[in-house]
Image 1 (spheres, rainbow, N blue to C red):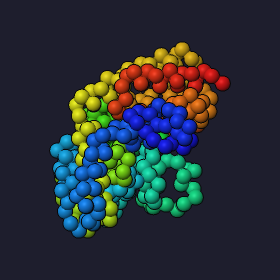
Image 2: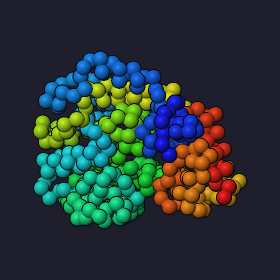
Image 3: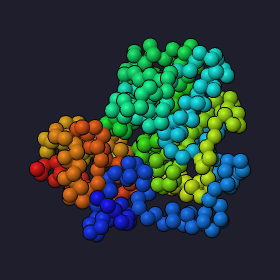
Length: 375
């Protein structure tokens, strides 16, 4: 498919065929397509004449954006970058610097979970549980290990003398839309606090409103030491961020980490608008309410069709395990005008724009059910 334009919650191909978007560019287009506020922010940024000035200088859009994120979170500082993988790499560096500063040079390990996806750079790929992604590029960055999503296994792995950080997706996206148990997350917070290990929440796909709270960890009642963000943050422009606690940020010096384009005034101007929209209480309440309804409808669909083995998710982030190849169902959905994506051989992933209304959600579910039952 080649798309020529987008409007609201639909995309249009070369033949003018409309597709209802249940993928959002893999959780990027939270405000849909052609958002007027994004257009206005881009036009204002262009009118200023400032697209890039480097991080040697201050710009108002980047400072306003960082201040907005600090005001809405636990963080005392924000590092702005260009992508989710880059945000995770930065968080790993900050964790190691903090651990070295406050403990010892031996405390460098990074622990990740089975099913994780944290990016495709050398350290983030080392923390990604995808053998087919990893194999062509091994050996990857050292000091990174992957462990089962099991409290006893993780408690053994989280050696306070050797581990600098634990990185967790509260809801694993590529890993099959697996919602981690809140009790597990609270236990991991307790362990990491006692053992002086930085707890990093990768909210690149599940954060910024997708679960019905501004930041994903708010849905679980757990406050991490760092949060990484990206995907929807600048409405499709390249932008990532690391939200950093006061304790860790106080160990980071100017020049410890850097990026040429991160936080540039043009992208930051757009991100400022998007963050403001995604923090809107009315939007978050809508995502929460419609998300509960989506879960009920998907479970009912599973019972009606007999073609769905399991339903997982929350907010506007859902995965359904299907009895046949997920890619076959996805292609039939595309043919019917519905965009969905996969998250494994037998899992379909549903990531509608956060502005999608229930009438369009219902329309998409009808298309999905046809795709499940038609051969």
